[in-house]
Length: 192
Image 1: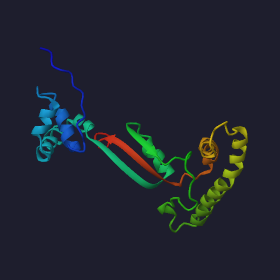
Image 2 (image 1 turned 30 degrees about the vertical axis):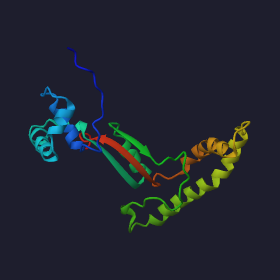
Image 3 (image 1 turned 45 degrees about the horizontal axis):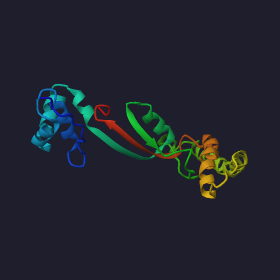
Image 4 (image 1 turned 90 degrees about the horizontal axis):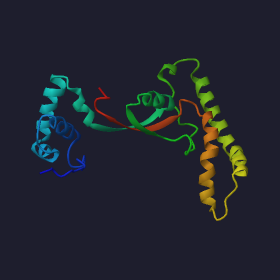
């Protein structure tokens, strides 16, 4: 008799991520189904398995099945780029294309605390934000003229359509120190 094919979710709302990772690891040596393996595991048993096989014996592939969802808030766009340079994770960041940015929301590096260039840095960031803010209406007018409202398109729909275009043009004025938020999903092995 052929076993029935099954595809199902091991729900992280019901099963802790570490237990899911251990469930997947144990399948390499167990004839049981994933559900059966998971049902036998407690958080304590999963931690013991992890300690023995991942930490003790270096079987780091187990950690690939533990997925972490990390929220990073109020970091510079430069820091966002550094984090995103690791392509072994999935990212969503505050959009420079769909959001307008706050003039005072930028990171001042600690190295500038008592430095004579601190004020110049702040003035430069504020000047870039001011130029960004002042450019938005002018670029919006040009984009609006090049992309007229379609027949039966509401004003709100037209504004949404052109907004991404004109904000996209102006976003390059934003300083790399602009504060952004980043959502990151990665397996635990990437985080080692």
